[in-house]
Image 1 (cartoon, rainbow, N blue to C red):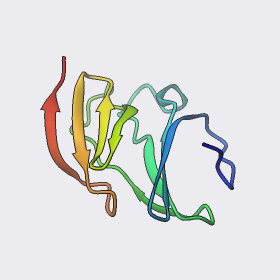
Image 2: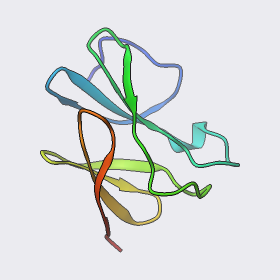
Image 3: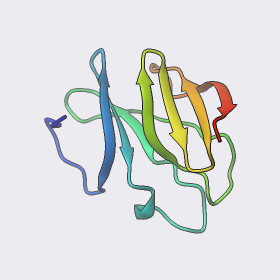
Image 4: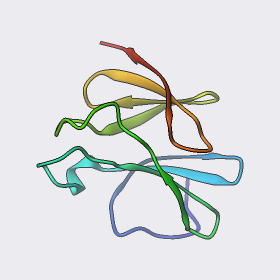
Length: 98
């Protein structure tokens, strides 16, 4: 999917839900000394709406790819899948997938 705006960071994955673009950035572009808050939602003008919360503050914590968009499910680097609220980026459910 092509975005109507650009980012300075590499985009790993993107989906559109309603009027929001939800973007997962490459976690390698974040500090290796802290968890990567690498998923955010943007409106159609490129304004950030929210940044997704993470399950923990571990340095290996980062989102990797979308599993589904209805419901919004996302995998993380540690082998878990989370269901998130697409309006807030808050985790609703968290399950192990490995």
